[in-house]
Length: 452
Image (cartoon, rainbow, N blue to C red; front, top):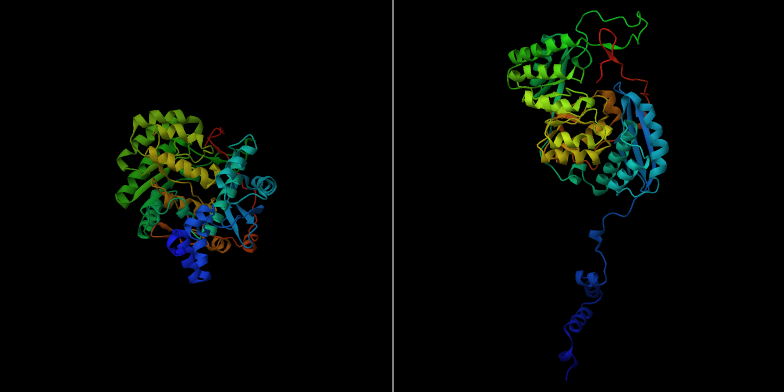
């Protein structure tokens, strides 16, 4: 008999490939079936080769006035690095050695891809945890690793978090002043520029300070510091409802109005005032109680339907669990660098989705532009986004941070740049050294401390 007649199908295929030459042989021995039999992974499934951390360091700067701390993670791949925000503006100088000494030594030689393992091992390695210094240092590392991962994948970070859930990020802006007329003028100006949400505050810091009356002379009494702040709680509680009434009459019903209480009145006073604001339809009232007074939320919930935002002073992910599960507030307001970065913030956001609690990340001027970009990438991805505190950065800040976030018509515009889409000019950053800027204590008329 003819050998070709009795040949097996595989032999006939091999003979056919021989006839096709070397190209055919390459195709035969590298076909998906043959590769699978050899237990080989095709190149497109292998991803990028491993990259390790070579250095972690802090960069400090204050181009906008507030102390900012940026973490730069350098890698074994030339030119590849990531940036993250580690800004604890009141104690910025303490964060720097936590980054330069402890995190640098802890991270050297580790794989940049293993973000979850890196976060958890760094979080637990100090044994005592959840402090703002170490959490901010960890946040800088975490955000920088997400920045690197996006750059390696050639994708913006939000794509790695699940892709877009919206087109752009809606923001609110701050309007403040000593008179309701001045505040209303600012609100109208912001409305004309496209903002749909405006936070209104009357008085000193946070809108709970003095209102033009004489401030107690603590220095003359040889008590406290002359620079300490003063707040008249009774006057504040009278003025806030009047402010909301005036804004509604002057600026109409279309604009959403927000207000931050900064936890600076007694809980029962806060409940009564918030109840009086119902008719003015606040978008939310922020931080009515300090973290030590969380049990008051149950009474607040049964007293008024006004939406509440809470969490700016939280730094432990576990602090959110029970209040969110019991729907004690409507917006989660944490400062994501205080919490530890993108990794824990995504867990908080996903938890909130189950209980219809929306995000409203803290985003003041003492959050760096890198931190704002991290906020924005989460905002773009999560389903339960609520609102984002917005900032318009000055020219000095933009020179230090190429790719600084931009707001148009009240929306943050998130670009398609890989990673977080922002960089730092270290030469420019060095022109603006940080200074001591501990927050001044706020006091009552008798000198007693008001606890935020």
